[in-house]
Amino acid sequence: MTERISDAEHAVMEVLWDEAPLTAADVHQRIDPARGWSDRTVKTMLSRLLGKGVLAYEEEGRRYLYRPAVAREDYVSTESRRLVDRLFGGRITPLVAHLAERDELTDADIAEIEALLKALKS
Amino acid sequence: MTERISDAEHAVMEVLWDEAPLTAADVHQRIDPARGWSDRTVKTMLSRLLGKGVLAYEEEGRRYLYRPAVAREDYVSTESRRLVDRLFGGRITPLVAHLAERDELTDADIAEIEALLKALKS
DNA sequence: TCCTTACGATTACAGATGTAGTCGTGGATC
DNA sequence: GATCCACGACTACATCTGTAATCGTAAGGA
Image 1 (tube, helix red, strand yellow):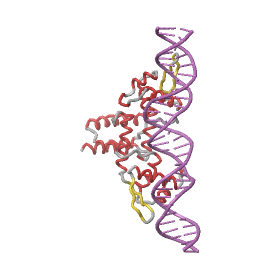
Image 2: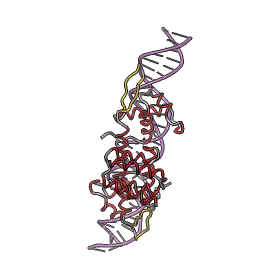
Image 3: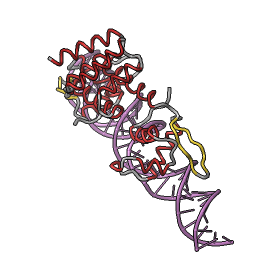
Image 4: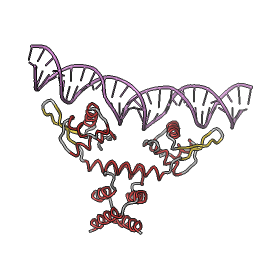
C-alpha cells in the first residue's frame, strides 16, 4: 500500500522507529556517523519520507517534530514478503532451509528456533 | 561481490536460471507477458546484465546465447542476508519469530522446519 | 532595529532503473 | 547483386536515489 522506502530513507526510518518524535537535528545526530551524511541529506530524506506518507510531523515553533506514520512491523512484513515471493516462490520454509544451510546456524540458534516453534504449536 | 541486480533485471535472470543458454528472442518469449515488455526492453536488460558480469554469452552465428554467470543460490543468499541484516539485526531467529507472529507459518510449515533443523543437528 | 542563524522548501545533479527507439551491418531472399 | 530483416550496440528519456546546496524567512541576540 505505502510507497516504497529506499535504502537511505530506511536508515532514517530506523532512527524514528527507535525514538520519536524527533527534530531533523536529532535524527541527524542519531544517524550512524559511518554514513557521513550532512544534515542537508537527512533533511532531504525527511522530506521525501513525508512525501511518501510514511512519516508525519507536528510543528514545534518553527521546527517539525517527525514521527513514523507506519509501524515498523508492517514495513518488515511487507519487505519480508517481497523477498519470499521473489526468491522462494512465496514459501517460507525454503527460505529458512536456505538460510540454515548457508549460514551454519549454531546449535544455540537451532535450539532457540525449535523452542519458538514448539511454543507456537501449543 | 557481484554488482546489484535490479528488479526488472532479476526477471530476466530467473528465466535464464530456469533454462540456458537462450537467445534474446527466447528470453523475451519466456518473460511473463503480464510485464508487457517489448523485445527491446529485454535486450536492454541482457546488455546491462552482461555489463554487470552476471551473464555470459557465446556467439552462435550472428546471435548471442546467454547464460547465467552467477549461481542462483549465491544470488539468493546475498539477497536473503541483506534482508536479515537490514531488518533483523542479522539474526535469523527474529525473522522466524516475526513470520510466526504474523501467522505466516502453517502447522505444516512448522513441522517441516522442525524436521529440517533436526536433520541439521546430526 | 539589524544581523545572524536555524528551519523547512526548493533546486541541483550524477548515477541507477524502467522502458524503449535508432544505427550500422552481416545474412537471408529474390 | 539489391533488399530487407534481425542482431547487438548505442542513444534516449523520465523517474528514483544518493547526496547535497541555495533561498526565503521567522526568531533570537546585540
